[in-house]
Image (tube, rainbow, N blue to C red; front, side, top):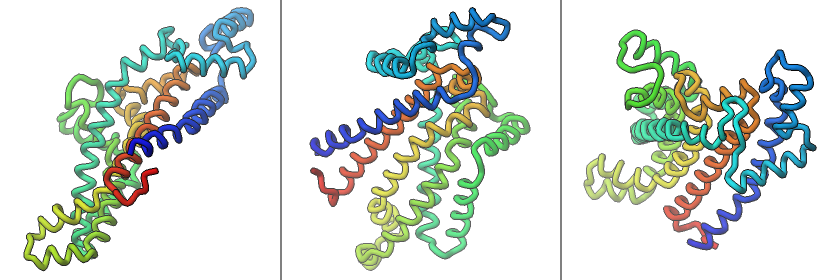
Length: 306
């Protein structure tokens, strides 16, 4: 198991290098001159050029890249052009908010997705199956921002049950978590249903029923337990997508997380902040995939651990 884990860790290093390189050059393709933004629209050409030299944007692109990578290795994400503060400080101030939203979304989407998927799978071909999968398709089809607007209109404007913006209370997480996790719940439901349908065809399920076990025991104690491998894999992979999806959701709810910080940074052409945030999202996605691979190996003994 240790060899397998080390092999997977080494395997992600090329991916990480590619991501770092891609982010660096992609950010510099964004239209706009950050030196002009920092200096101000009324600044003279000399003032703009002085800012460009100060930011190191006058240097050859390969020198900028090497300095960027060197800074990453030292844990230095650079200075924000917008706030004049270290990017690491900006990220640290909002990272907890995004992770709280992500985990809240993951918990709610997993619970709803698993229950809906099992309910549909064990009633395959019946009205329960049709209803469950109709809800799942609807959840996948509706964009997060549209769901967010509906939730705000219904539960904030009309009923006044939950606040529309801010942090500090569990109530601030409810609507953003539902909006962010709806499509993920639908995906989990569809995968869970497919897995349950396949497992229910196995001989040991028929044996369990022949022994007179209750249907609830057969469904949750045997069928669901043996379909957990695929469910865990899907849940783990969707965690990475939740991090990326938080950008739109945080913008809709004015939620002070990394997603909103990324939007603000893009609007200001804040190169250091943009490339650092994209790198953080990518790195988390890579780590989550690594953890999922290891969990899959633990849950599935058929995998050959080299």
